[in-house]
Length: 353
Ligand SMILES: Nc1nc2c(ncn2[C@@H]2O[C@H](COP(=O)(O)OP(=O)(O)OP(=O)(O)O)[C@@H](O)[C@H]2O)c(=O)[nH]1
Ligand SMILES: [Zn+2]
Image 1 (cartoon, rainbow, N blue to C red):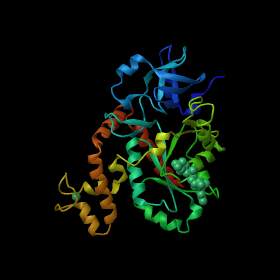
Image 2: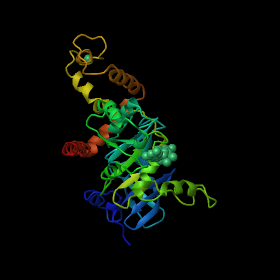
Image 3: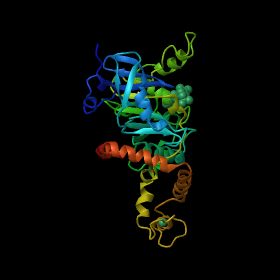
Image 4: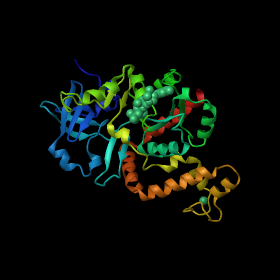
């Protein structure tokens, strides 16, 4: 039985990327320290990074991670990862180039930012997740969960409108099934998606609905059963029956909001800032500040500006430059055109709807 890697998210272009006769294309589906699990056209295989490659890789974030496309030699077991193909997007925890920098997932097309419409609802939190998602190179979609527990959905949506510029916002309830079809519409073909958001907002519940089974809950139980924790490698990249792929790693679950791309998440302020008199305007007390002018004219809320400035300070502190370096790498490798095109498609689709 041969496996069609397009079912695991490969684009036709990717299928032509590995040309050496002894190497074959594979996707990393799980990682436990140095041991990987990869999906090849011949099925799932344990894999390791080839010695030569590990010498070439300069920093921890260069090593393969779940979602990566890799070139492997698979005649022996474990298969040997010889090359990591250029990433189109990358979710990183910690700073790139620093000891703790860790890739949570690679090559995610859409990040569903989940927030429940009841207790967890917080506009500023969405803002933060958006900066992080834009920074990764994936396209964010805001998913408001537990609509059945909310009596004023319209008011909540209105609150969000100013921070979700150019971003699709879905409302759903796993309880009633409302909105689940529109979520499913994003997860088709060779799309790879991930779910982030606070604990308890309903990510597993949504993933199980996409899977059409309660696979996630059983997965956790199996990992700890008597047969030994590592006897079966938990699949962290899951193929969905209706097409598309979900990446759900433990790291994804622990992901805190950090790092980010303010330019896209705060496109309104970025646009205003172009009209400030001084290029390095901090939008506080400078003369000719277009941002302060918009604030005075009621075109921008004080909360949003405060949130922007707070994130700006944090990002400067958290080694944003390192992140930018990684972004520049993505741009060099892939031109980031694909991500741009996805944004445009999303915007267009939104208009048509
Ligand atoms: N009322 C209501 N409850 C929901 C809905 N979706 C999920 N829940 C409940 O919310 C609780 C948490 O859901 P999970 O899917 O485990 O949340 P999670 O985001 O995966 O949480 P972590 O695994 O901790 O990251 C469970 O008790 C679900 O049954 C919904 O649409 N409506
Ligand atoms: Zn200014």
